[in-house]
Length: 165
Image (cartoon, rainbow, N blue to C red; front, side, top):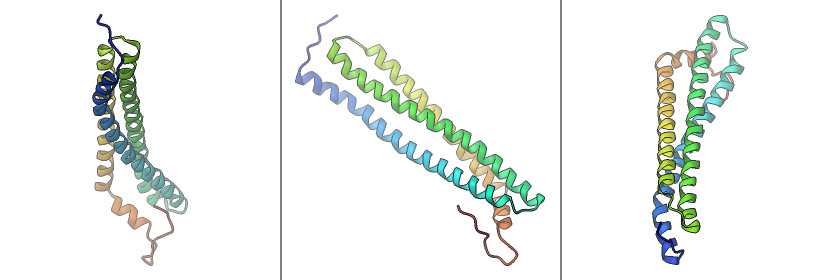
């Protein structure tokens, strides 16, 4: 095994190699922000419907129950997506750490780094698939009757009932 010398030049080279994973972290953080926003919207909508459902007829409740089930499903998808994206980000951090550690302990860790990076990509792929699942459920719910839900939330005079979105 060749002797690795810790110099300013070797550290600079390691920083250059670590730049790509750092950009990947920035992208994952943007994705996490979008996902957590969607989760917040799901939570807010669920709370709104649960408070409105108490004063409705059985027929109206059935329509809202259907949407509540869709919201629950969306919540499961987005929670899994957030967990997978977070796992990916943490694994990318391990890649960066391992890049630097290999310079300090003078051990060749290319296999470990490659394995960690592949795992990070699998976690990111999983996050994106779950995110797409949540988007598809949201679109399907809209197509199947959000107009009915909004109509139910209106009283006879055409004024919206007090619910928060």
